[in-house]
Length: 262
Ligand code: NAP
Picture: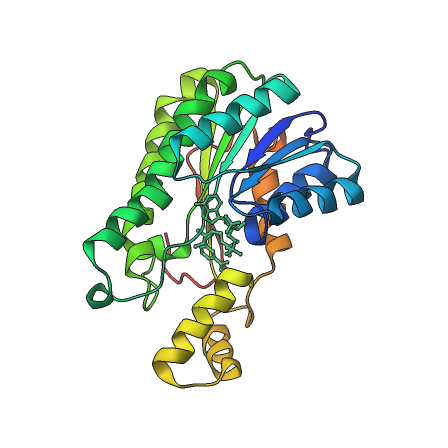
């Protein structure tokens, strides 16, 4: 199937590794022009890797999605380099692990800024350009935790529901501008973030890494975690003109982990 992404301009935030990087990479393979950002120097290495494999135009920028000035700089640089913006994928790092008892008010405020307000700021800054695109789309990356709380992740379990509400609301409000707005709810996908979460679990339970992984896999009908590439394939399709009538969908990519009917 032709996803019709050739020449489209795509911004994927928080993309020096993990789900964001894999998604940007897959867009580049489909012929899109890609902008990626993250806070550390690794972002330049990621841009080079993607460009050298795909021969796509890739712009890597150091930016923190919790900072309004950084977001404005990224959007401006995207439009300056590629002349517009067709697709926005809002991603951010995950919040620290912990229970309600472990988590103070400052951590709650920081997590709201990281997960919810970053998406609000990005979408506000990107909207004028998305409205000018022939095939605009927004994808928010949230979590399976919005369907079913994940043990020891109170911040993610709580605050990501705000991003779901934002996504669904915008899918209705922006329909008249032809902008499709969807979310992917990843389940366990093996990235550095997951490695860190497993380490946090090990510190609490005293179990080995193999035992923690086996316990997670046992709850997934497919019997394993996903790969970043499996996530990226779905993300890229959802954002592409090939999915032109898909709007307001909260799509689980979790190997069947969520067992509810809806
Ligand atoms: P990851 O491997 O830890 O990668 C996180 C990326 O975000 C890195 O590129 C990091 O680069 C960047 N980042 C973090 N904070 C940032 C900030 N303030 N501004 C800009 N970039 C920032 O994580 P992942 O597994 O790909 O997860 C991505 C998102 O999906 C997270 O929110 C995670 O909680 C969520 N999620 C993941 C899974 C999973 O199984 N992997 C499941 C459900 C939800 P820098 O550190 O250089 O900024």
